[in-house]
Structure formats: structure tokens, C-alpha cells
Image 1 (cartoon, rainbow, N blue to C red):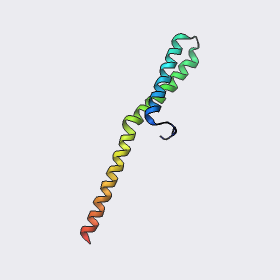
Image 2 (cartoon, rainbow, N blue to C red):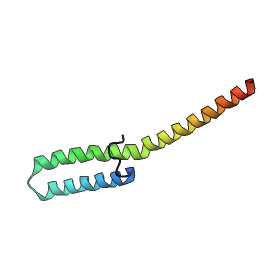
Image 3 (cartoon, one colour):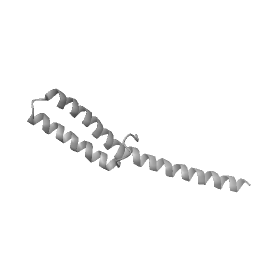
Image 4 (cartoon, helix red, strand yellow):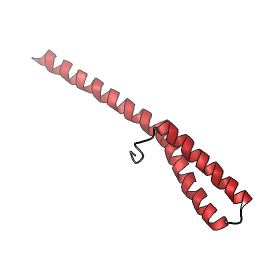
Length: 83
């Protein structure tokens, strides 16, 4: 998931959506259908991937990190109570 580390996930999302819009516009305005269709398929995948990462994966990673921290605190509290 960290393929594009030079750009923030939000910027990746907007970049891929703009690229998809330009591909669709290129399909409408030119006769180069095959390259544009391939480009639209690729940019659609990248757009959906960026959206899923932005909306679901990154918040889930933060939540898991917080849960692990709480679990470590609970384990420490249990060890302190038994000693």
C-alpha cells in the first residue's frame, strides 16, 4: 500500500481522478480508442485503490494501532495487579 510515498494519499486520490477524467475526455475527443480505453481501465483501478486506501485502510490502521496500545495498557495493568 505504500507504493507512492512521495505524494500524500489525498493528493494521490485527486491525481488519479483527474487522470481518469482526462482519459475519458481523450476518448471522447480523439480516435485513439484502444490506448485510451487501456488508460481509463488503469486509472480507474488506481482511483478506486486510492479511494479505498483513503476511506478504509488508513483509518483502519489507525484504529488497530490504538487498539494495540489499549491492549498493551490492559496487559500491563493486569501484570501490575497480579504482582
